[in-house]
Amino acid sequence: MKKHIVTILFLALVVSCKNNVEKNTDKNNALTINKVTNEVKLASEIEWEQLNPARGENSPKAGTIWGDRKANVATGFLAKFTKGFSSPPHIHNVSYRGIVISGSIHNDDPNAEKMWMPAGSYWTQPEGEAHITAADASDNIAYIEIEKGPYLVHPTEDAFDNGERPINVDKSNIVWLDASDISWIENSENNSVKAAFLWGNKHNIQLYGTLIKIPSGFKGEILSEGKSFRGIVIQGRINYQMPNNPKNYVLDSGSTFSSTENSKHIINTNEEAIIYVRTNGDFDVSSK
Image (tube, rainbow, N blue to C red; front, side, top):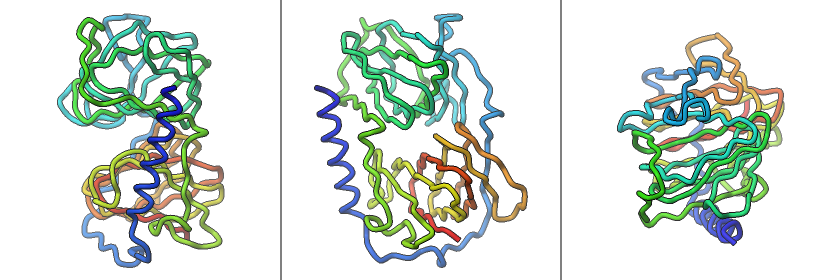
């Protein structure tokens, strides 16, 4: 039942975001970059540790991409689960969002029937709500995001209702929009980029999260006006270049690129790729 309710709510969110996007805007040639603040972190540079040290060797692994999940700051990290992993019922002291990068992951009430979410699926887990997390493939990795830390695990005896409700959105229920629906994707024959709104509201230029699907053979750029912009590669592999640096960075899943001022992110790819964008400003995607 929860899955069907969630799908309706997610579709409502997408329609709301789509209707709020202003048409006929073209910022691709108007962005002024006063300072290059681009940064890159490769997945190979991520340091892994126990996500829940209290469980010892039975704990999933965690690798911080940005922030610090042990401090009172927003953070993004990878969580790695072994095949057959299943946590005991528990709660967290903070809410989080998750995107499946690889494998099959289940996250739901302790007594719920398993609903395995494949790569590309999205879910949220409210603070205080009892749940379990399980994994069913040989390689299970998810991107996890919190708005504040520290990220802690507590027993279900401490459960509470903060008013939020969890959602599980299977990859097949993600709603993709293209240039015919939204103005900040360039409308051209060479650009079949698509976007899926996950949370927040781009129209009000508040913090929000969006999936961007980049087609194979794409060569172009992402122009960002956000004071906080982060792109995390969820699937595929992209080549990345900074505007003032000829070096080519190969970013595979789990890698990230970011900026803190007006910025240009030059990318190309020989395979379809999905990038999760978290930002608090406007951005455009255009091909060259």
